[in-house]
Amino acid sequence: MAVTGFRKRVVALTVLIATAVVAILVVVSHVLLSRVTDADAHDLAHARAEAVAANVTAKGGRVVLMENGSEALDEVAWVYADGRLLDGNVPPSLVDRVEELAASGRSQTASVGDYLLYARKVPVDGHHVVVIVRVDLTPYETSEQRSLTLSLILGGLTILLAGGVAHLVVHRALRVVHEMAALADDWGHHEPGRRFNLGVPRDEFGELGQTLDRLLERVDNALADERRLTDEIAHELRTPITVLRGEAQLAQLAGEPVAPEAVLSEVERLDTAITTLLRAARARTDEGTRCDLASAARQAIAGRAVEVAFFSKVEVAVAPDVAVSLLSPLLENGLRHARSRVWITARNQGAAIVVDVLDDGPGFDPADVDRVFEAGVTGGDGYGLGLPVVRRIAASAGVEVRAIADGLGHVEVTLPAARAVT
Image (tube, rainbow, N blue to C red; front, side):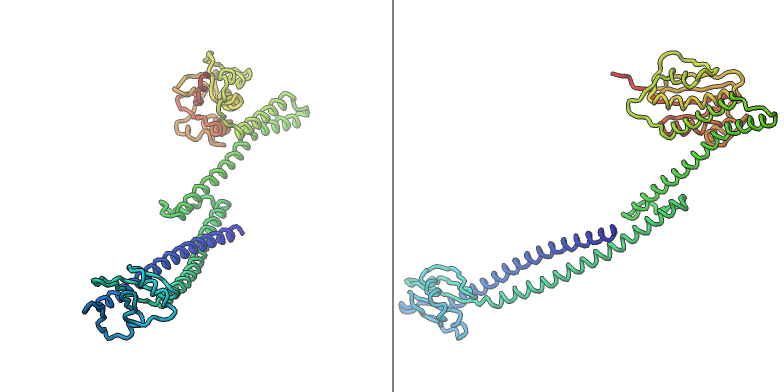
């Protein structure tokens, strides 16, 4: 219905514009034609008057008209000399107007019914001579009417043709759009890797194809992100569940109850993992957000054996819970793989604060530093637990995090420094 409504609106708009254009053209052409026919009628009247005036002369003190041999001219041209009709037959319906023009003694034009009257003063010494001619306007008016009728017919056909062409063009255009949208929708559900790949846009359809390609790319990324989140959740929750199952099986074999401390520890670990994942999904950096990095580090350490190698107050432009959610999995990963020591340092780097989380464990393999944040990727003694969550939190909060292969367990987190309050 929406497509049909749009098509109707486009066709209606096209017909409206075509009607307006045709109306303007018809009016303009009719006005121009009227001016041309009026000019032709006046030219004819002047020519007739000139022809008659050329035959007027004075002989023996009298105004005479040399014979022109044209009886037809007597019906459309009359000569008045000193107030008297010298030549021609004036129709009764025009007598009054013709005599009025003759008495005026000057050159002028007048319209009477379907006729154009033209009076021309003829210079004859000692006499008042006026030549009056008549031009029948009926042929000109008939020509104008026929031209107007033909223009209206052609204009109507033009409007119908414009509406038909608009309907056809819009139908074809919308069919292409509909097909592209249907393909994009189907690919988004079943083949997110498919693209139109129309190259550099050369028209609106090329731009549409490029836009749909970007949309499909976002859909593909969203699906990939959803799969990563599922992998990360499974990765984070599998270890504590496995420990709980092992404790339960050992207790079952030994005929003893499960140790409450072990259950509570793993339940706490599950709760921490779930809370961290939720924070990762909701993490955002808002304008004006800030926190004390040392305080966030102490909260992330939570009494664990981790050294903090900075003491001055350092503020970063992220929310406290985001900073804690970033550092906590890194510290847990460091404690799991450290031989004897885990520590945190912080340093200024322009408009950013770089936090280094280090441990004296085996560190990262240089070949794997770009993959350690992928769920399920392990290396050495099994690093990788918690790192996918760190990457998700960092991406959501606009923070950069990377592993460094320098012989230590070293993860570098670059946080935006908080702006000074004025």
